Image (tube, rainbow, N blue to C red; front, side, top):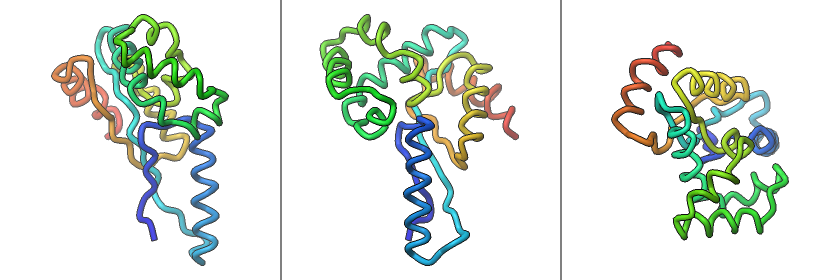
Length: 159
């Protein structure tokens, strides 16, 4: 019945594989063998000429929703208590805890972040995972700068 599968916030390879497997089962069950629906996601977007600022933006955003990412985190070996600790740190405004603990595995699973060159490489990796559509969620840390970089450097790369 679906026209597209959207995996909000999550681009973890383990989760993408599970989602594709489940969709394939549903397609077979519906008698639509040989068909596949487009795959989409909306990872967080930290984009700036200042790589550290971009990454920190993504780390802060991830801290705000990580508690709800039970299935992807379980597949990645991230326990419930770790998710709770990060969520509580975000709630307290304890950004230092987020910057220390929302590491590369989180960033790869839930965001694209860095300079335009970094983001282009990360988006190419997502295409290799089989994503047909990507919506970049909450670009920052400076919205105007992120949108300018997207429009002038990132998107032209994919045309």
